[in-house]
Length: 489
Image 1 (cartoon, one colour):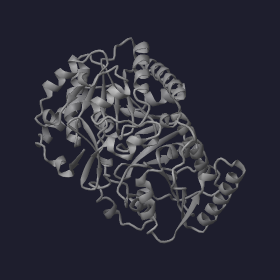
Image 2 (cartoon, one colour):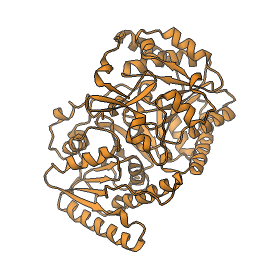
Image 3 (cartoon, helix red, strand yellow):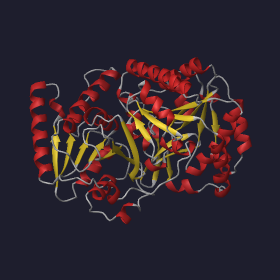
């Protein structure tokens, strides 16, 4: 199913000033801590000046609950885990969050931040979170809100169908490469059908409550609130949206329903987190803000993502002069001795180029490797094995790069947690729409170095190139901030 991109601007315009006023009133009434569980590091694509934690120890979460910020992120990286690992992690986090909240006498809500193209351990994660929340708080979760809208990545939900933007067309997500994912693929065209498919009929498409764009744009807030108040038995609620105004209007009704005693679980993309958390939009980061004061070497780009978009972006990146490109041949991964040799050679070349002040791009073979099995988790384990090799491209470096760009969700998580040893990072903002930057803490391998987390499925063909040009000072800052309406595909 395809639509022309013009449909995005075809809807009635809401009262923007009134929307801002009403949402601000509701945000002021709420003192709940928002805990965002991020299944890979890209979930901070829309926020700034908040913290992300890479563990869920008691002391870590106590500190997180004591912060003044309305929300914080916990990086689970569960999209790179097996079902068994995901279950274990979510039970651990549920218990740890409940204990920290109880110690600080704080109410809380949990958002399960998932991929805007619908990949991930759904409904497993939210089912565990719902049951554990009820166990630890004694409160009943009435419904689950699904909102994959993410305009920075070109994801829009219209008439209950989720679309991905490619140029001037919107293509339903089921017709994209993302729906063919070896581990998390799906066939459903509409989100209600997606719910029925993923829950294996436990929740029927006809029972899903849908919030339409027409309702939102007409600001029928009371009607939407009434819909939410009637939800029972963990029913699913789909939110249609093509702009942030749609989310703001929905969140007014949502906060009102919550204040009347309703409890919800959330499976959303990054856009919802920003609105529900009351985080204002910020301009794109400039080269001056991203400059590392003690940078003496070149920068490093590591690409592990195998999406078609990443491959095209790498091709475009090669237009920048003076970047050295190194290919890591992962087809040899089954020959441990040979693969270790080429990995060592790649790292040695990296260090040599970095010491010469050159920017280096290391990328995996563009042909996607698959396991010799129909077992979905075997495919996942192979991906993780490759990612572990990729993170060594950073973790084994003895040279401090001026900046680091990681391309791909699992790739960026492995590099951040394992190679860079990050425990807590501050989200500085975005270098391009939907492309966040972490400020690495003192405990990390390379303190102070800007770490750019570049999702594999975000941006136009030239978005990676633009980001690197900002980092290397080849793109004037005013040019870098003009891409807000791009980077959509």
